[in-house]
Image 1: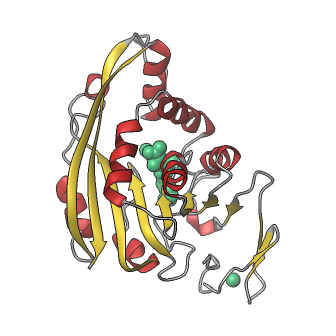
Image 2: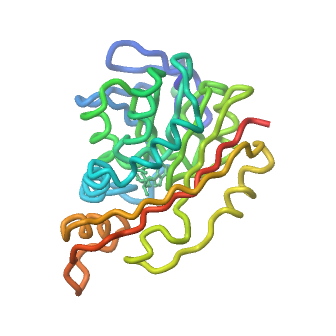
Length: 256
Ligand SMILES: C[S@@+](CC[C@H](N)C(=O)[O-])C[C@H]1O[C@@H](n2cnc3c(N)ncnc32)[C@H](O)[C@@H]1O
Ligand SMILES: [Zn+2]
């Protein structure tokens, strides 16, 4: 399942208790909270790459307020996972989608994120999934064809790697913020649909496209968390309660 992340290695990393060692002797220990850090020095430009603990916590509080519930429900309907599926979430953040998709279908699920703080949060709360710190913009630390489904929401989009780790017939669910997502806070955004179709078009066939939009009333604390989640905390204007649009464009592809 796991492949050694050391450059030019890629040997299998078998599961031996709480540590992993490849045939070339590279070894990795599980963190106390149960995740594996496979980040290599060349994978990160900063000492703590990806989202900070504060951003991960803000995003988790928003998930817990139900701001992603409609997207999750649509993902369940579109992916139709079964117990025999093996799911990967790329850029999993605090693990919300992987964990709930796994609970719903009883499938095995893995999450990968470059942020150790986010993966730590995922591992602490969702013990029924496997959590890995790795750079999803590089080679994913998994064997070819290890998964039957990959999901990525507002995160990484590397279609050639998704294709490599998926089996024949595998499914890819991509979610990107639509132009109206959080428009009350950051104005109208870009339409990212053509980029998704371009990136995935050569390896995948589009099966379904769906926009999921919810207007949710948040108090000032909730608005502050939205600001944190888009890396705009502590603005001059104090946060006030308001209704915010959460809108994600979902694309379901199958391996071509
Ligand atoms: C907008 S968040 C979305 C998180 C999660 N999918 C969700 O919807 O809650 C984007 C995530 O991508 C992660 N990320 C950024 N660069 C990455 C990389 N190169 N490899 C893996 N994850 C990365 C960030 O740490 C962050 O958790
Ligand atoms: Zn190795």
